[in-house]
Length: 197
Image (tube, rainbow, N blue to C red):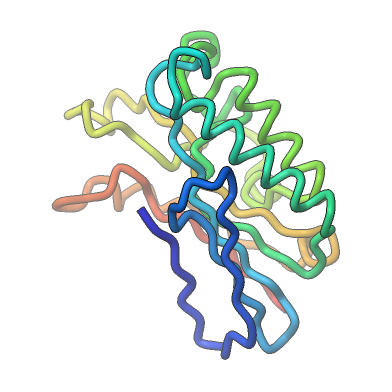
């Protein structure tokens, strides 16, 4: 695993947090010349069993999210964008079947609550849902489903958030679903937003 930021603008400062002390390359942040900070996160997937007592990886995921929350509570972000695979589909319309996935890692109530606390701590605005407020919306489809497009059992695990001081500058959000059907695709589709800053 790992994260990166590609920028046409010079990056003047970088930082990388090791949340949950995992020793993984799951976060990088860069400050651009215009003062905007871009965070890229790769939250741990959490394994298959949504119980920290039975599954160490699930506990690590919750700890990672708790550390994210605590960082944003202690250091309120400003002029910031947060992107990445957060490995949680928070809304009912971010999954193909809300009731069927309530006990499936990525949509369990405890994960959704932890992510909501991260969002609230930084006052983050969900830019994708600001632009596309209603309807089913997915960025991930399992490799296990050969008929992924027809079955359409997706989840919105990949997110773009922004702080309130710049969220209104965001527009044209989209998820490039067609990329999931390319030769040798990722199970994640690219997620885009444009910011006029």
